[in-house]
Image 1 (tube, one colour):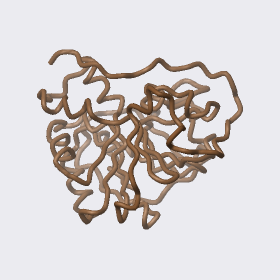
Image 2 (cartoon, rainbow, N blue to C red):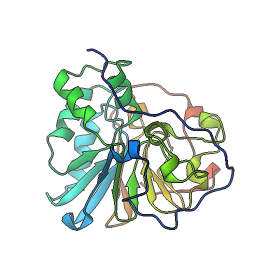
Image 3 (cartoon, rainbow, N blue to C red):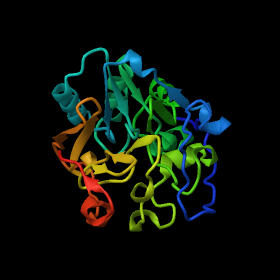
Length: 260
């Protein structure tokens, strides 16, 4: 599989340690031109409810079990925080399952970006990769947004590039050493995110984290926006080993742990 182009911009430096405020949040003018090209705005009135689903990483069995448990109607949207692929047993099956559901919209994750750059090959054919190329970097409705990685609280949204939204974790720290962006983010829009592996879903002032490490033997988690609650299914297996130092315990940070 040859290299595919993926429009990402370089991370920008952090100039301000203090949080900015987007009190005038307006999705029509919130993002840079480069990001706006990869922004998908949803009309919330067209959907009765939205479920946001965490990182799947090729875990098709768990995805099917979670969707069966949710049992969404056709007019209920399934939004995905990205990283559909890699590490787990069936990346192609996950892509096909999501692609073929008319009520499913995923955002681009850093692992999809690796596939598009030609840096990883999880067994996808050209049709699968063509689908990944269509994924937005940001999905939004009302005062909510879905990105894979996160947001730098010290910068307004229009100063973020696509790569920021894909890979943000600890803007003032070093990866899993923190401090994490979602500990400091307290503004609009409320951001649903994955990318950072959690012992339990995170509920911050302005962010909800959903990567509960399914591929590492944890769980696959969704957030039911209408009921304001989490839904999860346990992993059937540990498909890839991961050090416990690479799991974030919400109780050790300035956020709440959501119930599963």
